[in-house]
Image (spheres, rainbow, N blue to C red):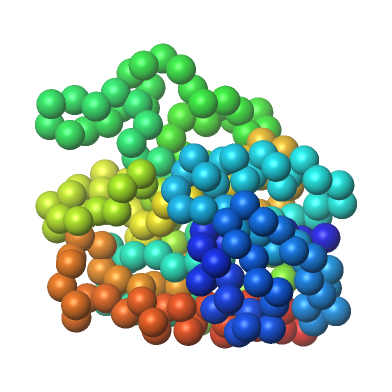
Length: 231
């Protein structure tokens, strides 16, 4: 059984084009899709909700892997245009550590790693294995999808200056609010994990022209269809 988890019920509805049963925050529903047994789950927005959900979901029997799908912002919309799809090869939590007066964060300055993923200490980054883990789950990455370095934040970045700093300091491509928690949890337990995001906005801008939430939600269904192509 593969767990498919989104942050919101709207993302879940969009991902399966309305064919899936309704799932609200904190709920799960079993669902057969393209001959595969899935467990659909809605975590709620943010790292705390994602971590709580991951703990519950990964403790269930018969979990073969986890896929986190949803929308994300891009730091560079020329490289990651609105409405396109990306998969994460790395996740970072840029707010973990010691914050200095200039707004920089040193994850090691407090002296406490978050834990281990395999034999590796985890501070504020986890390296993912999307190609390997997609294969392990019998899923397919889109040939035209972008490969992204993802950041999970506690608050949506609302200024160009902050967006520029995050992009530079973390080599960030896309921004979300849950992926680090899911990725870290799966790596800690040895469960295959895949994070797939469609681009809804330019990070740091609140201008209407830099957002296409409807288009990104619409792209989720095509992304899920691609994952199961050939399945």
